[in-house]
Amino acid sequence: MQPDTHIVVFDGICNLCSSLVDFITARDPGNAFTFVPMQTPQGQDLMQRHGISVDRVDTFLLIRNGEALVRSDAAIAIAGELKRPWNLFRVLRIVPGPIRDRAYAFVASNRYRWFGKRDTCKLPK
Figure 1: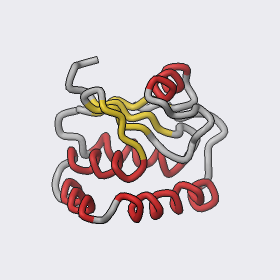
Figure 2: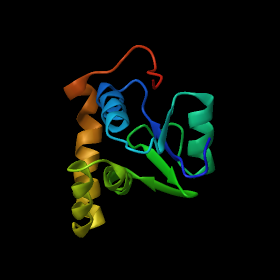
Figure 3: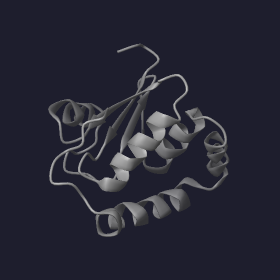
Figure 4: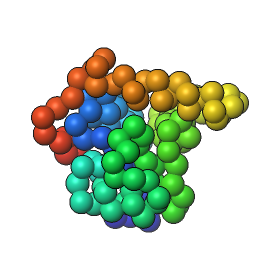
């Protein structure tokens, strides 16, 4: 894995999460992101090393330069790395974190109901 790679640990059975992985991959100009399903041993190890319970599937984890970001902070950081116009979502940083995270939690808690889930874990392309 190259040193400037950002690792995204995501819910591999979530249809929304898997679609977002495909979306990010298609708009990642420098192939900076590597994706690891949280249901895999590697994903669980990364979560534990960064203090996130492996039972917590309501967030994804971005590891960038050794720093772990979750919830809206991770989403905004990822958007900032994508091609225009998607990188303009960085402006959402002006919204206070607790408000952003409340919106993130609302979507996260409803994602299976709204978008469904897979029987098996998606492995990134």
